[in-house]
Length: 243
Image (cartoon, rainbow, N blue to C red):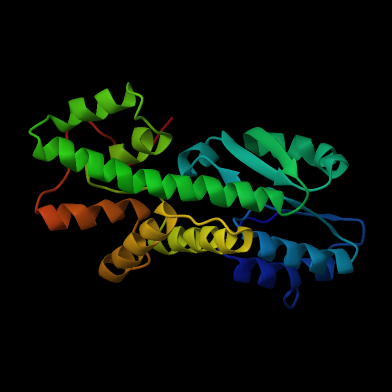
C-alpha cells in the first residue's frame, strides 16, 4: 500500500532500485492510494502487471483531518474481484469506498473532486471578502453560508482556517497545481472545454509565485486579502480542523 505525493515518487517507490516490484511476488497486489492522473496510473499499473502484480488504485478524498480519524473516502479503480479481496483493508482505513470502474477510473473521479475543491476554495474566499466589505460580521456570515444553498464542504471546513488565520489545511500550493494540471490534461484528452478550472489554475500559479509552492493551498485567499488590503478574520474558529 502506497500513498505518495506525485507520480514520479510513486514510480520510484514501485519500480525504482530496490522498489516494491523487486520484493513483491507475482500474484501480489499493489494498492496505490496516491493521487495520479489517469495516464500515470495506467502506465504504472502496466509496469506492475509486467511483473505479475495486480494494481488496485485507491486515491482518497475528504481531507487530512478525516484521514487521521480513519473517516476518509476511497475512490477505487480496478478489478471487482480484486476490490472485494482487499475490501477489509480499505474499510479499515476509510469510512466509505466507491468502486468506480477499471484502473484509471479512480484517478478520473479523484481529479474531478479536487478540481471542484479548488474552485470552491477560490469562490469561498470571494464570498467572505464580499461579506466583509459589505459590513457583515464574518462569523455570522460563515454560519449563514453553511446553512444556505451556497454551502460547500470546502467552505464548511477550509473557511474556518482562513477565518482563524492559520490557513493550516496540510495541503500545499504545489499539490493543488499538480492536481489542477491533471484536470486540464483530462479536459484536453476528453475534449471538454473547461472554463473555471483553467482560470483557477492561473490563480494558483500566481499564488505559488507570491507565497511559494510550500504555502498552504488555503493561502490562495491571501491574494484577495492583499488586493483589498484587509484580512478575513473572526474569533472562535480553530487553527486546525478536528472532528
